[in-house]
Amino acid sequence: MDRALAPVRQPNQPVLIGPVALLYVQSLSLAEGYQIERIAGSRFAQALAPTTKTIAIEALLIGPDRLRLKKELEALALVSRVLVAATAPALAAAGIPVVCGLTVSLDMQITELKFAQSVQKRDALDVSLSLRYVPRSTLTTVLGEVADLALAAGTPLSTAPRVLSSVPRVPTVPLPL
Amino acid sequence: MPDWNTRLEIRLGSTVIAPISQFTPTFNAPHTVIHSIEADNVGFVRQPQTFTFTMTVQAIGTAVADLTELALQGQEFEITVAEKQGTDWAFKALKFGRCVITSANPSNVVIDGAPTASFNCMSLRPRID
Image (cartoon, rainbow over all chains, first blue to last red; front, side, top):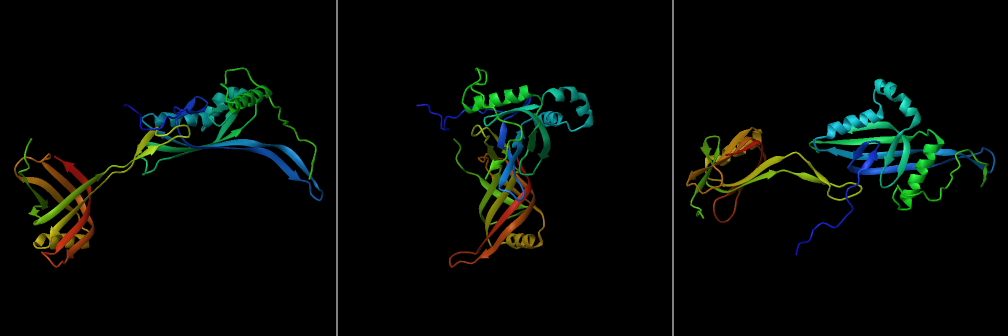
């Protein structure tokens, strides 16, 4: 009888950061929320604005094409002024989409990119990157929310969108405490 | 199917270490399995290799005294394992270059038989012939 010893699992889906596919992601964390400020000397609090969404990714680059991936990530992170100048028109329209099992987030920008080579990992690079949400147009924001909802609903991204929850993106009236 | 009819000898530089009762070389080549957030066992990463060997020698000849002195002084030496008689061994020789003793047990005195000495060593340059 021929049986595989390893348990049957999903295939290794990459984490897509724009065109770059990271296959060996060790951790991915998403931070988001809404800023609430207490109004001094009163019992009210003011909901100010959504906290900027940030995504932190720790991954490994292994294999012979690790340095090519490093260069591609650097190009996405715009590590030189030349790159910024060259891509500025495109940047105004769209950011970097991050597509993974946890979230679909459009319009992200890489704010920090760190590579580490260590003695414990031969022929491999540790990469940690932080991305930050930089909103462009309402359209991409809506598209991003739709894609994220579709992901949460477990439907493929290509099917018709479900009900869209509109999240207010402006300061609201003070909340009573 | 060859019979084992071969004698091996172990040399420290050019002197034969005798009577040796045990010689255990270990080539440690660690690899770590990599998992991703989506799947298990998706790759591996190589880690630094280390080469060590352990030998147990009866504390009779001068070789044990030499080895103990090498251990105390932290000097580098060379060890060779080779066929003395016969050709049944899978290898022609195992050569361990740039060795240092990491732990020595120079003379374990027991009630029966000669005292034994054991040495744990590491090598920077092993070679297989």
